[in-house]
Image 1: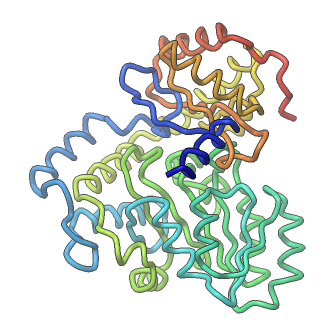
Image 2: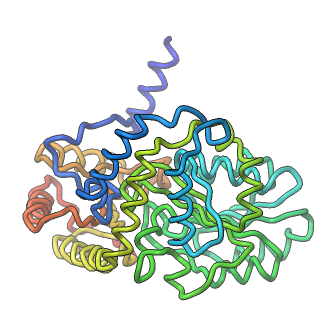
Length: 382
């Protein structure tokens, strides 16, 4: 079809063309396996054991026959870990968001959303048919002005925010969001995908980070595919809200449940993280060390004391060029461009992981130093 060729050509001309790269034989510096748990020996042993008992898949959705004691045990472990009464598993973070948000807000309701929320949140808000108001990133003064002006005109209101923003690594201010939820009678939905296992001394998430307790009007969504090193997602909240989602969240009702072995592996990973809280502080220390080294080399790097370290290049063309040059050296460091980030905000999204050895990091720094057109005086990050 001619239109396909024309559309692909247009994407390529804008330096926005995407393709997959096999990571085998490469040094991977952009995964979300922050705590190095995905291939921990105990995790693998638990997965293999459960695989032998249960087989590959769950066989059906959780409401048919796909709910096993492995799923129940993981939900209970997550509830305990997040210190929230109840939990529900989803197939992925995307499914959790597009299932939960439209179940909580619909036509006649209001959603207040941070400008830099994850794409799955943006899509979920669109699917909800609620009125969606987007406030500038972390601009809570603007957010409150929107609430003052608009909240009274809508039945229900849902405030939605990432806890740790996936492309910049900065953190939402929980006390302010809780105040909004309380004063303006709103629900608060927090996407903890990159906060679970990272924020707080024990990695419990944003509530531990701010030394606060969960409140009933709060819904916590999180993924198992980042610091937990597995796959899938969850939503934690009150028992009544979880019962409601079981009956209303379409992406839960009409999706096959997670494989039992995946659940068992995730539960074991969480147990290891609880047993070894040093992992949380160590990855934060590592992130700071990497940030300092990159700054010495001359790169503009955003750093908010999380494992996400975007090397800012601003130009889509330059981001692609440097990513390809690194690929030729054996380094996997993907270019992130529009629409994942705003136009003119292209970057290489580097992450800190306990997987890296000192030799790995030295290889990375050496590779970066020998890049063509090294952006020593690139646009500064204020």
